[in-house]
Image (cartoon, rainbow, N blue to C red; front, side, top):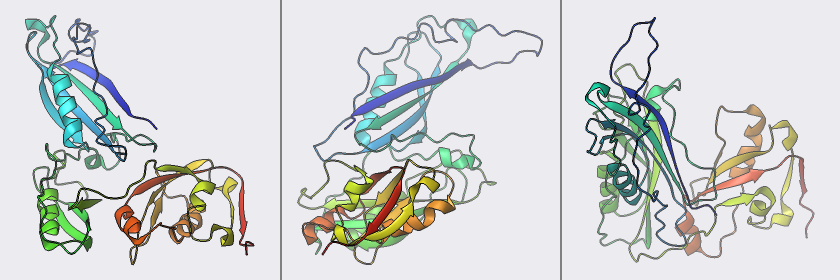
Length: 327
């Protein structure tokens, strides 16, 4: 399992302009050659052995004084509070001692990726995408605070869809698409998501919708997975009566090998299987088949606790030929 932190300094520039015929020669400060950073990079802030989280941040840094910390603007954030703390502490210690009066304000953009999962690493969406507004989701600086209360559910789940249709400073429209929770927790989730922003949005951007699930355990204890990435055949072995599965798929026609993102459902809520990138019609029937599988859980409590858990399934090349011949 990875417990990785990745940081990449993407670019640096000075605010200013030049004529077309001039060759711009950047100073040491503008090239960040004298950038002083802490000796220890941020680490994945693992909470416990079941912490398989991921998070990403993109920050814009503005250096205006050689002995001062940069001004920090968050351009994208899907990280929880402990990850954000590490990023802010880390870049807050940056210094650019060779910065001179002629350098102006030097700017830089840096990505931070946190990964405690076996799944493919998260990425910060690029602003060059057709839907440019999708790259600037910013979550609140601090984690959701919820003190619990009376509920008939041992573990509460709320799944929402948030639609951003306005400009950057406007909150999203929040719709609850599934709830097995108290009214108090559902309201707390609504208030939390109402704080989300997409600051780069303009009036010309198309509406953007995202989905997120919130889970709360009043006891603080719940079942979870210690890994979240499985080869296809191992995953199929976790279904009910795997020896009776029937299917025939030529995976070689699907651009193999590839990975499937799989979200566990339960009850009236189906599993969800998807792949990154454009929809490949060659994969659709296979994905729908995966969504229809019945997972074998050790108990009802385990099934309830794992509802909404995200997995990754590694699909190899070859012919999947399951004849359901086991007695």
